[in-house]
Image (cartoon, rainbow, N blue to C red; front, top):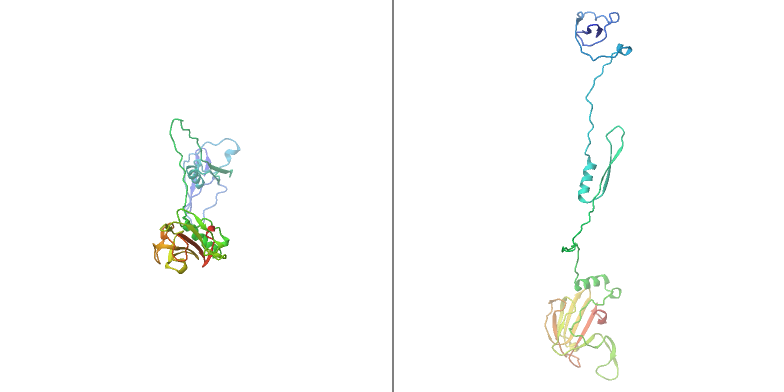
Length: 285
């Protein structure tokens, strides 16, 4: 373009359109074979320029509207908002979007407020708790499994229930004088309970009846298998209330006490067997 009193003049070429300050001495000649350039007065409205040397310098400046920076709700803000609602405390950092490249930190904390209840109002505090109940027989089964056949390695006290409601022990496990006289001693492999004939005899633990009938010197005998090598026996009974194969629970009546077999009177002879060997019942009751 040419800067003169009337404004600027543009020179248009057929091959392209360009603008420059017109200087007849420096304008290039059109290429051979091309039609002569057509000059036309193109009025251009330009802002006023300051006087002085700066006026002689022409700059092409394109001005765009100033970009307004907007706050971005990023992932860290969303996480912080969720944490605030759920009662968690969270600090999330993310890089800033401005030129200073500062680090912004979004924090969310849960507010705890005290609640005051008037003295005259009734209220209750509920707490959620998990409880589990393990039966005596489940404890017994786990104990015997843990023993692995060696009951000396586990605590057996209280594992079995007393076979009679009224406990009156007349003879304990171990060596004792021969009840038939003669001045000698015998090994007593059970524990005797004094009881009137016909007293209900109860299973010391849950199990399966593996013997129910006459057993020689033991009289009418019941044997209950509790699993893992543990058995209990009930001897000298007047009558039996179970049969072989029956499933009994702890406390079920299996017989009525008596004085059958080698017996000196109405009583219950109770035995505890571990892998077929008699052990002291007092350590299990």
